[in-house]
Length: 403
Image (cartoon, rainbow, N blue to C red):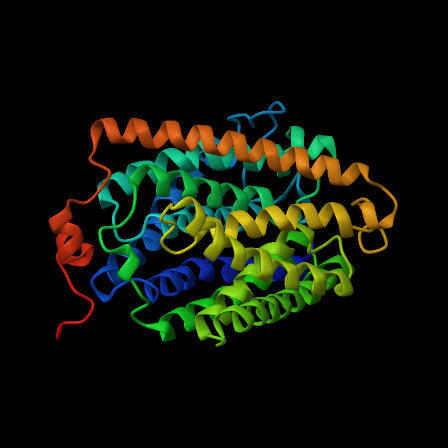
């Protein structure tokens, strides 16, 4: 074990943990003032629910030795997960790797809530989150990072394109469709863009731990991930602002923050496999395609993805996975592969297969979960509750006492 790597990964785990409260601010600023607390509670409650699930059995099912579909139960309750290095890193404590991965599971579950903001009952959300983290996140994490079939196939996902962004985005799309549109969703506008800006900045800051920490050591690959993360976020802002300025005639703060998130999502699966020059293209195109997902796709099909969980994370993660198959090069990471632009079209087809499988699995299982929850608990707030606001009707409090 190396103390330098341990300190580095400890700091990265804290950075990723911070992303979930950052998401609460990011989402909270975009909803109406009467729903800001309920929206923030979704993210904060994910910290509680998923942390316990992860310790009890989630980590074991995702990362313990098992088969190609699911891990075993030998690490349930963190049995055998101590300070000594584990099988995933020889230089950091096994328990630290477990905590680092826990922050990913928490954030992924919290991202979903952006799709159904301002209309889902809190009790239904709690049960859904427990089941989704158990039945969807853990298998997908195992497939990609825990020795499962996607990793064995040779598809690449450095820090969570499939595991975090596609899975949360597709799950959000399912819930948006099942729950239906908000009562007054068309009239909704962000109530506090400063919250959204601060939340976006915290998410960007935490993303360095998210992507750089996925190298599990501070080496050349980690530094590529560091540079690529910041560069893609910057390029994502430019891409979003360019198209927004052209179509809507004015660049907006919400657009700039959304572009940064789009660039960050897009680079996540590729961060440790591509050059900084490639990260510019990945981030810029990420801003463009996510703008398309947020505005054109949602408007065309009529679903109410309230805070664009699918538009940013589903679409951005899909592009990022494809981009990995295009731009990856072993000159950056010998443990990766060459993509199409470096002479090997095979990686692109593996990426597409992994993405397609993730879409199908997450869509079906999420749909089944929410339908089962709906058999026992009302999913949707009543029209009166929605009109009064979920802060007051679900939690008995208001964010702003003078309103």
